[in-house]
Image (cartoon, rainbow, N blue to C red; front, side):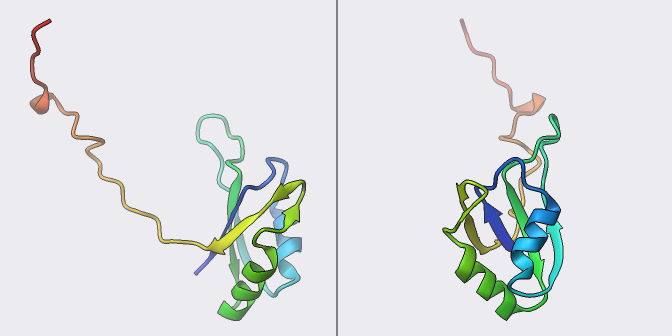
Length: 100
């Protein structure tokens, strides 16, 4: 399981997060998602810790804490939801003609 870290500064680096979370145990991995089009950080990250107890300690200590000028939102990450490929079912077969 990993930790979701939200409301991050757009200036944060993986090294910054590694240092902050290392105070609570072994940091296995840090992911900082970026916007596909702009390459800019999206303002959140995922951190994997060595054990559940280390994750819990980090969440307890850092949720709501001020860091780099922002109040962090830290909790257990939820599994990614599957998105339908239909995108609202906009295909040529579903179009209807409307009188103008």
